[in-house]
Length: 114
Length: 116
Image (cartoon, rainbow over all chains, first blue to last red; front, top):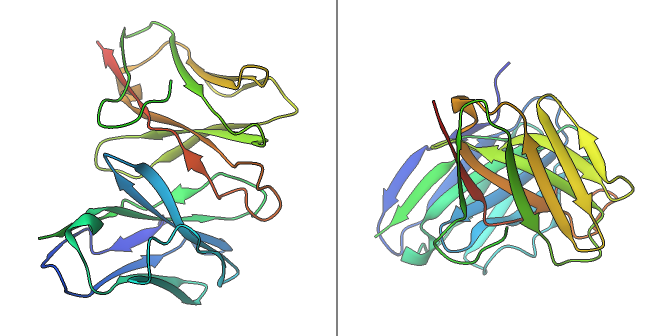
């Protein structure tokens, strides 16, 4: 079975540009999470959805970040405008049960903002 | 244990040895804890979890121990293999519970290197 699919795997962009990261969760999973990983701050939760509804976006760093989940099989994380400090690996994860911390992570999107 | 900044704790073992990776947490409200493994270039992978009403849980070659009194969590890996080489993260849910078990706070990680 396919796992969580993220795209692009790598993106290099210039400061000020819009970045859109995409995620396809595992079919049948009803929770979706966006995490960010940097050397300095480790893994941080940005936002999560249950049944396509955003539940907690308190980890979204600022208004430049937005996330959507228009249907059960697709989510986007958008940064506009991007800044060098946004450089990180962004992970999407899904879970089949809300009462479990067993998350299935994608392989991540490595973002570099110059 | 936990660390802040660029220098992750490291553990180096020989193949076949048992490994113990430690983690301290600070949130006394946390009632759910998880260990994840992350190999280079990949996303974290779930290993084992434990709820606060337990102090020990075993899986295949792994055991998690929880000491709530001193807020300490450990992961024991039996007969460590080169394929176990990775960064290991403990995570806690801060007592979120309910529909928020995936709302996790991750530790900084420990690098495990297994020598053949």
